[in-house]
Image 1 (spheres, rainbow, N blue to C red):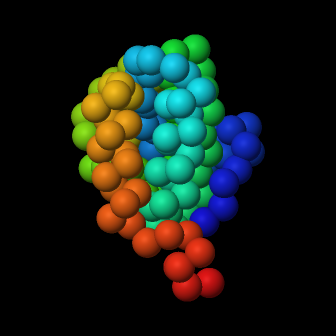
Image 2 (image 1 turned 90 degrees about the vertical axis):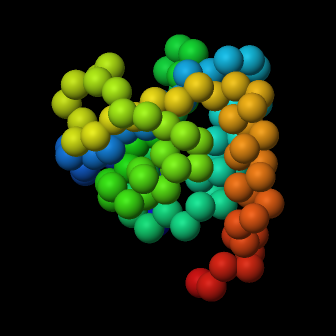
Amino acid sequence: MARLSWPDMVAAHRAAHLIVGDIEGPTLTAMKSMAKLLDGLAIEGDYAIRREAAEVQCLFALKADADQLAQAVGALEMERYPGWTSQRAFRLDRNTQGAIADVLEAAPVEADKPA
């Protein structure tokens, strides 16, 4: 897996899969939660993450990686941003951040993963 900058991700993967979290609450806390979650998931392809207004946006090269995040946060299909192969959204509130903490607790720590 490789975390890319947003512009590099868009240039390299025009048929990417978008997942958007509508942030409710402190933005910095929400971004940290999402970054930790992405680090804790077994992401295999390229991806990017950014904050745009009151959203955290994640873009994935592989559908399986997008599916994995969508399942972890309960993201549902949407059509807010045309041009992506798939797109889903979820509410990134206190409850979702609690669910993220649960997923991270159950997942192996990055240092424990095989190289």
